[in-house]
Amino acid sequence: MKRRFAILIQFVVCAAFGLAAHAQTPAPALRHFAKSGLSFDYPADVTFEDQSEPGGQHLALTHAKNGALIMVMARYEIIDSPEQLAKARKEVFDYFVAAMVKEFERQKAQVEHLERQIEVGGAQASGVRLRAVLRGEPGNAEVYFLVLGRRLVLVTIIGSDKELAAAAAVWTTVRRSLKVEDRTISDNSLNSRQARIMELECQKKSG
Image (cartoon, rainbow, N blue to C red; front, top):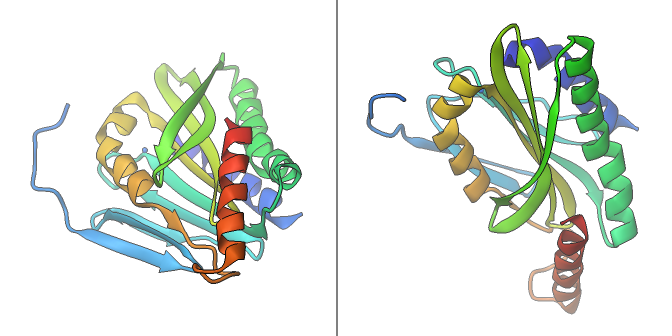
């Protein structure tokens, strides 16, 4: 399933930023990604690609054994108000989800749309699970968003049911370790505290 969406995903991300039961095995060593204030951990046996655009970061992770695709995307544009969040959500999250649904429908697949919330970086992210069957194989495309470090962050996972089950541990590691620093102000300033309050308010609005 993931491979069928590879081209679509590249198009969606570029447009939005431009305006994947097993026997237990030893856990692989973790690697740490950190760039432009965004950081997270991921297993060493996962293929990592930095496909960032001028408008934001786009990090893709795949595993040769399970095939599921996990992505972390974060726009550089700073969000200081619920209005800016609504605009960013429309330009990135809503656009991404609509494009995915359109591709499912183009392939004559019936799409189930379920709103969900998950934990990302210690905060609640809102999003959707799109479920469909392609060529007899059921799977999901999950997309979630939230504000971290005053930036809109999207996390996604795409794959068949088997691929998603195999990638569950990777997905959890990436989500729970994800952090975005606010690099525009110092951590001890009054503005920093005000920005954190605004970030929490934006997260409430996104819920």
